[in-house]
Length: 448
Image: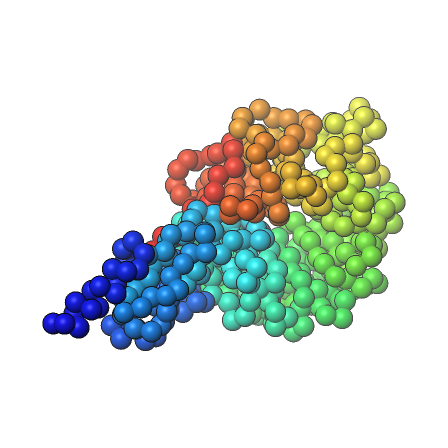
């Protein structure tokens, strides 16, 4: 009886009481002896709770802390951590996202520690076990992340790429055609250092500076035309003459960037290359742009590029639905708004990244401001209204560190967590309501 009172006193000396789940998969309580702390990696269905924080038995749960990103409490020697919205519950802690990647139906994040989590749906099933951010199990920490359509891919510290989600076109690169893969499967290639996923195909950069692609080949994804319509394992991009460090894709067009700012492209581009010439439909071609490139967003009708000095350039075909001419705020575009040659915009200033949806564009500046313009039917411009804008406008009270756009919504990572605005189908903002948000709101994190 004396020991019972001692244990009760020690448990009450911890933080305010709440419960704790030890096993993030089954939801089982921690063993009474304090052994077998929770699995930090968890699974795609993992809980926000982890194992015994101290691992020393029911009389101790030190440390029991959420690191300022949630609430931690101790009861009967067990620690439970409830993460703030916008943060990623890893099982034993809450982590702040440093990168966000969105597709039509999902929001995925990566933390500085390399943990990855997603909210929302793929085209065929859930990316997570709930509608809020939940941990995805990877064999090693992630260094990069990309999402498109119903598929998500992550590149890891082991120079491997893992993809999950829809796989009807071979877009997961795992050698199979299946309806979907709910857990990450490895792309059949080695020594990969960067990845991009469009939802129709994926591409990755090899350590030697080459590139490989896989998925739908209906409009050519970097190698000889006339091949199979679906490529389930990565094939080398042909005629790629510059050493590649990054790749970026949207639908079929794909671009590869070198460390010194040169660009090569492949896919159905026609007059959208930016240098008045027409590409071949097989393999890559180096683009002769009048500037060196930091970022290039290869949209299906309009190209946006950021130069090494932070200038924003664009060229392409009008109009985008709801936007009129994408070049309307640049007087040099002419009355039709069409420009085959890149034109530099006057705003926003000092850009470091740019993304575009089906009819809106957002740019991130060095100071952390996010500027958006275009269609605003679902509030995807984040300015608190539903009025379309032909000129860029900064989102008030938002300071971001990374940015990603989908068709009709946008997300950014901030000091308080990942925030999104726009249309909220498939519960991709972590909740069924509201159906749309014209202002940034924190994505819900899965509770314990």
